[in-house]
Amino acid sequence: MNRPVPRFQIVPNGAVPVRGRGLWLLIAVVWLLSLAGTWWLASRQAAPALGSVRAQLHAAEAKLQAQQRQIDTLNQRQATLARSDQISRAANNAVQSSLAERDEEIAGLRADVAFYERLVGATSQRKGLTVHSAEFSAEAGGTWHYNVVLTQNLNRGAISQGQMRLAVEGVRGGKLTTVGWDELHQKSGVPGQDYSFRYFQQLDGSVILPKDFTPQRVRVSLSGGGAPVTQSFDWTLAGNGKGE
Image (cartoon, helix red, strand yellow):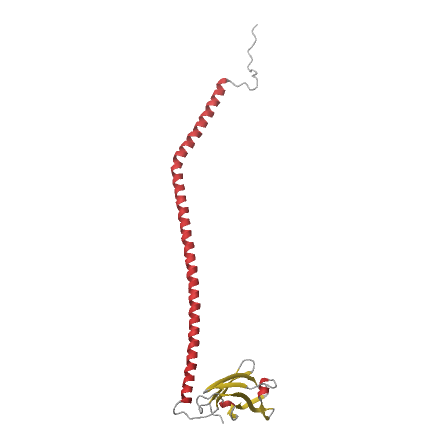
């Protein structure tokens, strides 16, 4: 008696037919070959361009470094020139200031020479020890700077020596008052200002006037080896040489 052939067969797990296994192996090999071919073609096409890009990159970096060195050099040169210009300006200002001082000094010397020529000239009037002028100018802080010029041309070659003192006459508290040498210095026993000259000398100094005092006249007293000399000058006309 013949048995019917079953429509389904039980195949053990993992048992793949040889024909199917070869087909999958062939597909894997073809896929790997396609990847390798693609990589090879990309390398052939990209390699020349990559080398050119690298060369351009190196050239650009070298150019950048050269330009940076040039910039550093120019900056250093600019700093040097700026410093040199600053030094030149300072030196020029110093020279201009020195020239101005020399001009002022020369003007003063010329005035002294002219005064000396008038004093000892052939046509000048012969005078003994004399107060030529007395000038006052206000200073900061309330003090007064004085400039007194003494002259003599009677005894040429002789030296006049002694001491000078000042006194200022004016009004204080509605009354006539004289501010003496000590009070002008706000001290007691102040020695007179020494002088020693052949033809003329300028005496300078500073004095203090009382706050409630209005000056009107200046009296200059000279004491030395000869007879004492006293001359007065109107305060408003001090320096005009018109002593009495």
